[in-house]
Amino acid sequence: TTLRKRQDQNKSVSSTTMVLSTANLTVDMDIDTKQQFINDIIAECKSVLEENPGNRCAKYCLEYLNSEEGKNLDSKDVVTFYKCIKTGLENPDSSLGCYAMTPLDYSKFGGFFDKVIRDYHGDESGDKKHITDWNVDDAEDYDVKKLGQDELSMRVRVGRNLIGFNLPGEMDKDER
Image (cartoon, rainbow, N blue to C red; front, top):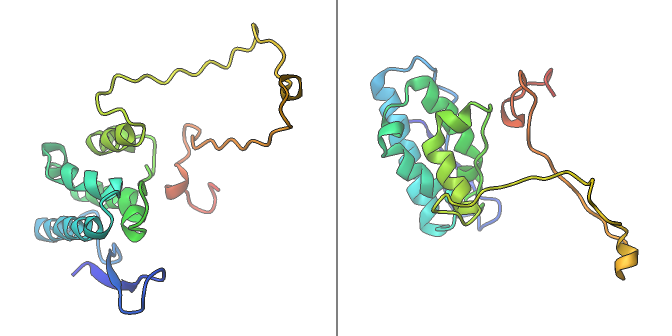
């Protein structure tokens, strides 16, 4: 089987969760091995959702693998898709836990990522549009002290990549 047990370090010693392993899988696996791997992913998602119904990764993975798009994944795509969802299954209390490995994953697995992203941003209809406007030409003074506030500390995290480089989850040591 492609499943192995792992002790959940955040719970009691008797509690275990199933974690899928890709160690014995190859992109040219036969159809039976591929189907067993998909069945194992589905079983793991159901297990995660029993105790963590807010885990978007597991929730939408179940929907995706039962959709036409999910059913038509080839072996290579199944392994890549698993890499995208692995963190969400290994950390069942995560509310998100899925990460594209390359920018193409957002379109290749669009039926999955689109639902996760819309749910995360509270946009089930798809009507919301993100507009970024960095134009400060018409800006007034942004000195917060003049607004009667103390100085602020802000951290901006950007999770984008450059063309030709993988996203962090798929980067090798040389790319980092």
